[in-house]
Image (tube, rainbow, N blue to C red; front, side):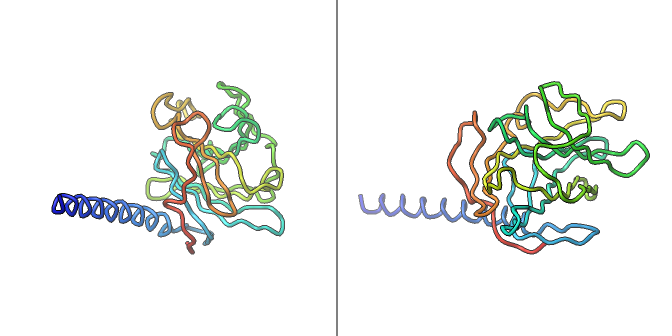
Length: 217
């Protein structure tokens, strides 16, 4: 029995080492992110659970704002989005979002819109929270990055975040896939501590700190 118990202990230890190494590698990849002009740095980052996306941010407790950089890999003829849902945890409907896509006259455009339904009008307008600095975007290395500064709703550091990605059709934003990872892109995030949990309706509600660390980008 002793040799068997010893083998189980060795196996468990090896598995823990592998899991720790994988988490450390993922966190390093997030922390190693670099941002193009204008040069920016952020205090925290986390690798989001789906769509290969990451979120980097600096929270300013003095005024309740956060500087953010949302990055997601997509082809140049596509769009990505990030936002906050102040009303319905785990849902896209009702979210205030920033959508980056190729601009009509070249460059990139960032749309600010509220998703009023599952078939939103995508009208550029006012969000449900303040945006003190105009958003910007870049496309490099096969990924979009959206830069925004937001006043966290309700002056609360815990927010229901959403993100998404999809194709263009005729140069216009088209519907994202309605299956798989695209239906799991919600997360409750604490911008102060970095604690995170799955959005409502998913199978995992345990708070995670995996893949999150302080860094300078």
